[in-house]
Amino acid sequence: MQHKNKTVVKALDLLSLFLTHPHLTLAQLVELTDKPKTSVHRMAGSLEEMGFLRKDEEGRYALGLTFLQYGQLVSDRLDIRQIALPWMNQLREEMGEAVHLIMKDGLDAIYVEKLDTKHPVRLYTKVGRRSPLYAGACSRIILAFLSDAEVEEYLENVRFERIAKGTITNGRELLKKLEESRQNFYTISYSELENETVSVAAPIFDHRGKLIAGLSVAGPEVRFQPDKLPLLIKETMETAERISRALGGQREYPRHRWTQLA
Image (cartoon, rainbow, N blue to C red; front, side, top):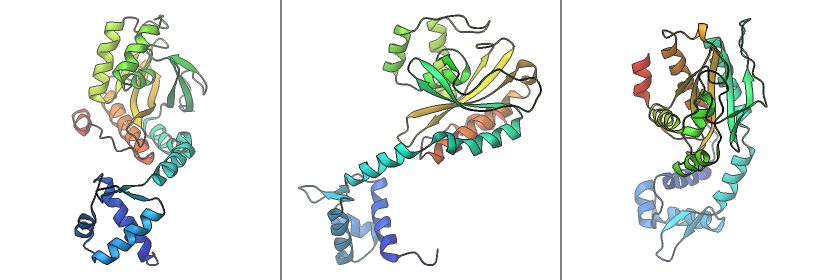
């Protein structure tokens, strides 16, 4: 850290100002950086030439289009499975139950990563398995954080089928569950995909604040008794937030829910 290039550091400090300010004049840049006007002007000019900044007709600076190229590359090259796996491992070790990472694929959710429990009695799930978005906690948490228009379109096209004894097959009941999930940032399912099973799920967001995946802990109902659920919910939410942060997400999770559950 002692060998950081001072010019690079100053440039990054200047660019960081645009994280909270969409536009800044030269005078504002000088005031916020507390640097000599000539130095700030020279640095802003260099960044503008390289496309990292752009200046409008009123002389206000903003982030340049070059960041779109870099941002898209970073987004395209992010492997959510690779990023999520260490946190999923930690969650599995702490809770002792199966952990799933699920993403949306059309009208379904698809399991993209799974860590199995070490208990001899376990669920039958595997990478590549599909489930409808209305059934199961991890699927439903994805549906909950889609836009209202997307949810409405989904309900217009989906055909409910009873998969297990707890499967939700009523649109009104589903909407109520989705609203609860949005408020709580977690959801629980009981026997929705398989009888006598329970799943706790929380959402994962990307750098744009959009839902990208769902994270769940699942197992037989006998091991998910009411006294254990608060800790399962708390740990699942915390892990989902950590994965979101690793993906560049800034969306705030309702921490008061954790303190109430702990």
